[in-house]
Length: 279
Ligand SMILES: [Mg+2]
Image: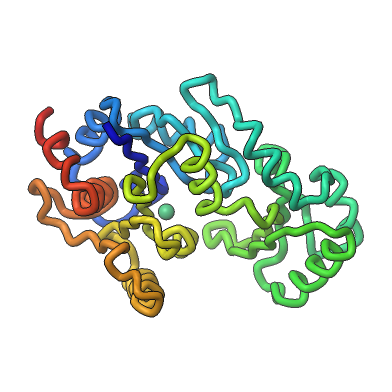
């Protein structure tokens, strides 16, 4: 038996929390599938431990074998009391030159635009700030980058906007702490083959993993610009056959959210189809 690793984003990929309709049967099939010993399930999300747990309980999701959370900075083992993986922490800590989040925060204490986010939005390898949504992120990122470089810290600085709260968000993360690196680390450590690993996502923050050369699935509810951009990258790199765009009409489902994840899994690994229908 060759084991299969199914990695999926949560919000608007497995979770039907977007405007498009869901196929309610899909989550039931995922639950059934994840109980099989051939399948290892990993959620890959920006969510913190508390918000991962909340999603699992709100939507009655299967408890995954692994959860890559906090924007890729933590690999949890939910079945082992949500133990974070020490090896992954060690791997990414090298990027921060053995400095803690508190050490790094000291570099930015004088920047008036930055307000530290609440404690529950920070973790060992995630330093997060609010900034006015009106501020120009480029010079601010430049200043932050220069100070990190001086401290010999390799970090990615991610700017986004919380549109509901109309505030800018800045995350400073070890540069290796990405969704795709975390997935590859998991594959290496737990010996999952490249051709037995599938990733599913829906949006721009999944783009790196979607176009990394892993078997990847874009659910049907993804925005057109995301679909076009992902396909363009894959065509340019000659890997178009490694990206599957869910279209629906699979087992009577519509291809949105979890239905699209299952459709893509069955596309790349057709042996899984019979497990989806034998419930
Ligand atoms: Mg998403």
